[in-house]
Image 1 (tube, rainbow, N blue to C red):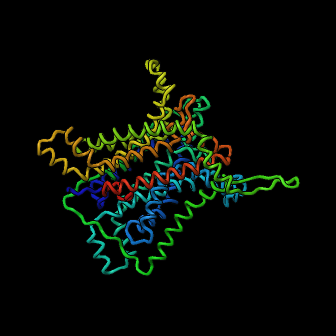
Image 2: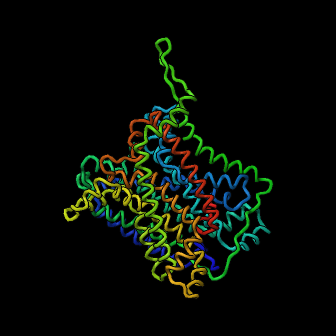
Image 3: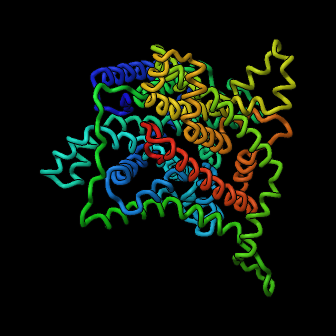
Length: 541
């Protein structure tokens, strides 16, 4: 079978593409400085500052974790990979609510910021950086881990004759995959720039947050002080960055097969490094869970005229399970929207992936299309759909927009489609030779598709469908501005309640959400493992 790779050693064309992208971004930055209004410049600078801060805070531990998790014989490696997949799909509001219930305003262990004693640690810019880093960490590990598992095994084996395994990881594995580290940095930066949930809850003004908060108040971009030209330049810059990421991580056919390197033995230091990675996972995932468990079981009793705070296990269990009934309406709408998005994402993603693997221009078209979708900030997506569907010549479609889930499904597709398409693309690219053999035997495209591609990739398709479902169910930023009256999702409901402090019933539904995501993420990893190894799915099995 023709070997496929997504992260080979850096090549001259890739360096040239990076240089050209950097030059264009510099020109866009100059134009933004010349044309930008004070508010747009301030908000863009603030968003870039938080994006850069998140990258610097996230990448070092992510690289360290990816090297050990995917390239060594770490203890509990399989379980850690499962936890990473759960972490990957953990809703962002679980991080927000859990950490703020524990350390935030009115939390159990309320802690002041060391930089500003009048502010809280999980609030303001410290809260934004910390919570964004927690949400971005598993993606950074995924993207770098895929690359670290690539490359000729002979180089590492030769280096092991002279130096220790850890030195091999740093001087050979990491050095050959510097472009993957840059991809992870850009991916995290784009995600932070377009996300508004954390900034909104932590009371920090960013570009996406101002667009979001202005629209519910009935303001247009002009009324919020933002102008079109600077916003267009920012979007173009984000799309260019995302296009470079897409071009870098898309599958490529190599001339000669490469044997995958075996996990490097850590020897006597295996226990030490395993403990370090386990402690990192524990420090990141345990506090929000503890915060939610504390909040859902908290009790306040009046004893001798004084209010005494306590905790009840019975209340925690009862409220956690009863929260499904309390938020049953929101859960039904969430399942309906996420299910519709999952089906559409799977169908369109498969067709795009097939187009990318069968045609000469397909890779460029699919990469650019997915990059454009991925780069668009969620509130901009919602605003664009709301503007486009309210044109007079679309008056006949008003019932479809105002009374159905059409608009939120369309908005969420911009989140799910790029990721699922690339997953399918890598899986189908690894089977390209099989389809070529079927074509040589006279099989038509439709016959090959229905008799070879689909039946042979049931597990992969189911895994991609579940990925789309989880991402859709977790979305807030893209769909919140286009939800019709009378339709509310659990994500939007929780996001609204978090602004007033997470109550115990909110903590209950978040715990149920956490259990559901853990179960689905584990199933995704199992299905991806059954589907066989692919470039984009190596970290899942």
